Image (cartoon, rainbow, N blue to C red):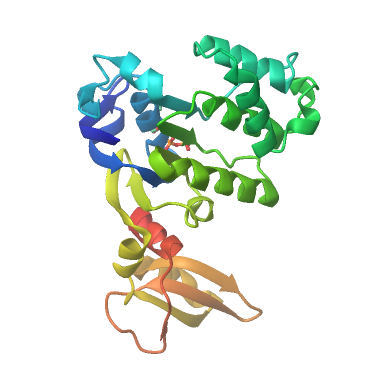
Length: 286
Ligand SMILES: Nc1ncnc2c1ncn2[C@@H]1O[C@H](COP(=O)(O)OP(=O)(O)OP(=O)(O)O)[C@@H](O)[C@H]1O
């Protein structure tokens, strides 16, 4: 499995770009797509899913041009869009049967597949109840299930953990780890902790551009001598933030503990163990 995105741009009306000259190559495994709101994550996933066409550039899956041949992608694709909608009067089982029909999936294995997905996503007990009565997290899990109906080889999840509680997040992570053995899985999020425990590689983007794509260790290593912590007075914070990239602040009674980036070894500060969150904030804030 290989997905190649070459110099892809998406220009919206006026001069607005959703993506600008974006290139990325992905082989099997889990890629975490991290970026602040408006970075272009959904724009990229929609083009990979062939729902939207690039203004420029090419996208190939296993050397097949999926802009010219979207069916090649459809056959292997599972996709959970950000704004996934459900039919409130159907129950989970009926909805998944309906989605399977739309995808052209049928046969004797379908019932078993639906039962397995409902079980894996902890929906078996509510499978006969109308989806309209489900919580946000339950609807999201139905969305995840429909994306996996056809045993996809490439799975795109746009902000999949929105609405999931901590226990559901763990279930989701386990499901994805099993799935990713021989697939490409792309998970988008603007929350580092949503992807840092499962992603083999991380792509960080901002303003429609790719800032970096590498393993988590490589990304963290790139700032390992730059993360410091110091304590300053409340009055000093605005002057301090004008001169430094601040990663985090903890307010105490009199003072503020500041975690920040420094290229040099500053006085009165302690070097800290860098994290993926630090690297993400550094790259997207500077
Ligand atoms: N249909 C559209 N018309 C015009 N501009 C758009 C359209 N869709 C997206 N954009 C703009 O393109 C940029 C990228 O948006 P996109 O939704 O891809 O970002 P995102 O990283 O997925 O963020 P979010 O998590 O907030 O959805 C944003 O500035 C957005 O306003």
